[in-house]
Image (cartoon, rainbow, N blue to C red; front, side, top):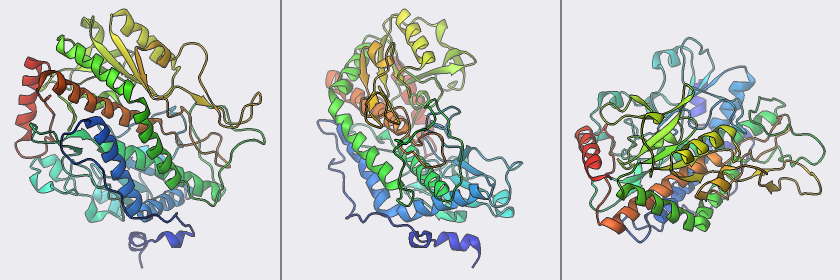
Length: 483
């Protein structure tokens, strides 16, 4: 049997590993219609999709992690074209806390070599290069392609060329459809609430956690970025190297998703401030130092037309122009912002650059809310504190200086101390910030409905038939109406 054929049928038992037994898949309690809480329904629907992945896809996930670990051990490269929302990079950027050097974002035929791995559910790499070099493909569905239910409605040629399952060696089915969103709102012909970014974020961090464990079990090491002090001393909470961590990571994510409900008052307060600004004719911006969360606010399928993402580029704050010139970067400082609002997404509570931009937003007279972690946990005993006790940094932090903060359930640094790695790997902040952001957006949509009776315009998947014209129309109408 060829290696590629073997990978397609590789069982978890062949890896010498065992995953916990689970019961049947759980259904979302949300009735797929508009109820008293769109935001709560969104949280539960996404959680249900993640539980389905655990119930049906863990063999494939484990096979992918095993193959990634073997690729790295042999000196190969693991490339990633995994859908992380509106970007391929997501929060896998240089310097990211708890990020192991496992996946290289993109695919470069000039640098690929025999035996590399490609994780892809969008674009799919260079198929001729993949086949010539026998590159292992771990594939999955994405709304922008033909591997999803409903793909018969796709007519955009660039999306029609995106079919990966035909040549994937391992397939991870996330359960996503062509709409890419999950919440039906009567009055809108397509759904709100994107999920591809959250599903992509959670699954790639699960794969990284398990790959790191397998590398550690084999005595291999990879660099881990971030500013956590190197793990030293006898009190480090090392993981048990023979026990899989992928399932544990998902458990923690699901628990933290539920804890968003413990801060639902903050969700509603943020939405109320946002709708105050919108109905006063002002703008609501979504800030992220990079393009990660900021891009979620820009022409996102399943997202509202009122979104504006702002981020740093070339040392200045920029945001996109309107459709059809939304690729144009406009200088944020060239426009008045008195009465505007900004949602600041952050991955460190005390990041100096984020604090600098908070001061800028405040100087413009903007309302400021923050979404992100409030703590940095201590990796070992220090001053009598228990290992991994969370602490709130002294001095200036974003949560203290914003009008409303959301995100007390997650920590800045990674979860797992793996022998041979200098820092703990795999934080939950990336998926959590993304989930919290879209929970807030769902509440904003509902707050607009409560106050006006109108439905905010929601962007469709423009790869589908007749949807590009609808996107342009919704953009124009949202400018006229404000939402």
